Image (cartoon, rainbow, N blue to C red; front, side, top):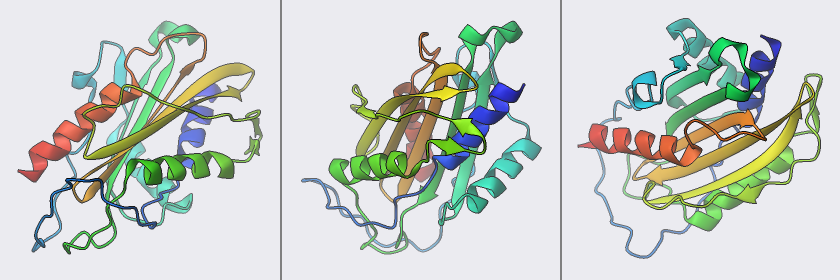
Length: 220
């Protein structure tokens, strides 16, 4: 369906990484020694087993293409893991929900001097992303984006931030929620799209918490 493909395009075009900017560590941030090798984050993903019934994962071929598309759309750092899930039960537009997320490592991740963001730094990055999204992309007239802060992000990563905004896609008023967080040397990002007049089957914050828990498990 064209609506679903256009949502996927929008996900890609709102994936600019802010990790090249340096933020200040929050008070009490624990120093970690240098690491000898790059961690394996390939399984730092959220799957359909983690979500309510109705969500379906993208195929390996689709994920490979998404990872390739992310690079072509200006994500300058290497993507360590990526996941996509969609809920579109029986063609009911009110049930449409598209989820996309990925992880990457911060600059200098091998050193104890790796980049440490604070909440203000993360929020500035998200707002900058929204400011850089044109009102018309690939034939989509998105309308004016007016992002607002997301709440209830406690317990996600060492530090986190989130925004929500409404936008037009093919005549439908959609909502996009984005959460980004840093856990040690890893940055995780989650994007959720759903009909603006409906409630999402699962929130961006809950998906981010699940992704964060996977990162913690893999870091043990």
